[in-house]
Length: 272
Length: 163
Ligand SMILES: [Zn+2]
Image 1 (cartoon, each protein chain N blue to C red):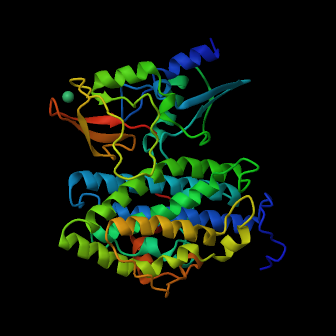
Image 2: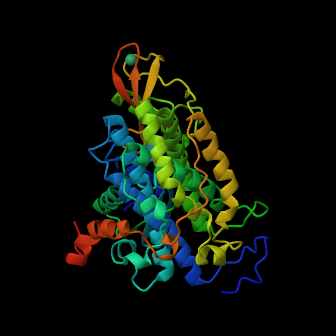
Image 3: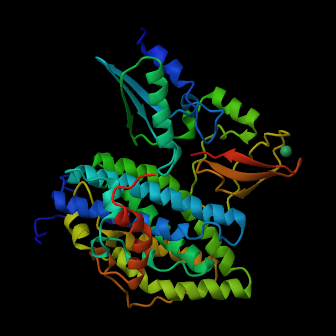
């Protein structure tokens, strides 16, 4: 891949079709897989109100995924549609980060993952929705529209999950231990968010993508502020797991896909 | 037959939101445009939330109502920009919500900001009109609602949250 000619300034020009599609699928897959994971809590949340909260977040994420898939399908053409992209791609074709595919764990782990991811999504969508020339980047109109819509929802997710991280961290000894364990467990999966995949490198500075490494500092600031209030110790480990964004997943993704894709694989084109 | 836009707007006022059946799609403010082009009638709508499951039913109901009234070539197109806001809900719609037992969105736009543990502007209880109410959860029975409870009449209620 040649990125030599790419400058720091936004060119506003669209990247290649292939890179654009990969970038959109990455955004869609992140939202779909986390939505699917959160939906596992449906009927099992610790209290009714929070069960409803996490499943509402799930619904928002799946809605965002649909918007990205529909847009990608339009670009791909040739009879492609959102269902084919969600139900008929194999594990190696999924471009979601590892963080979203990990098992839901206990409530602390689910809350923490949501918080880490919402803080990232919040910063990312804030960038992607900028459409005005003169703002940091000149965006693809449809991508900006999807991001602007989603940003309103993500603001709620971020506030809700931040408050819960603080409640658990600053709660009982038991809740504190659990949220701290969750941080220790999930931290090595956060580096991948800011480590650009080929389609992020290839679209950075165009009308489509942004370089995710630019989000790292503001993200750490947001996260560390909440950790401080929650009396959580940031493990600050440097060793980071990567691979998901380029199709190399943990063993967990295969199981989610098996469950999610079963009907369409067993009974192609079935509708209900 | 009459094919004026006025007529179509009034027909759409009979299409309701399946999740909040007292509100029409006009009350909700999700119908953005009506375009008549030769024999084709295009209705442009925008979703309330990205994942709102009612949108498919709403599109279908719009088509059905227009078909019933003799319109033939009907297209319902969804646009995302500008994103829907509760500011677009009609005053009549807010009044209908209140009577239905759901607190309407506050007039002063309070889109969720990310400051933590901030008290939202007081929401009025739709049962006893008290402002002594408390948010139980910012997520409710559908994407557009939050759960509240009234400290005066002690009744729980839904709040159509600002967005
Ligand atoms: Zn009351």
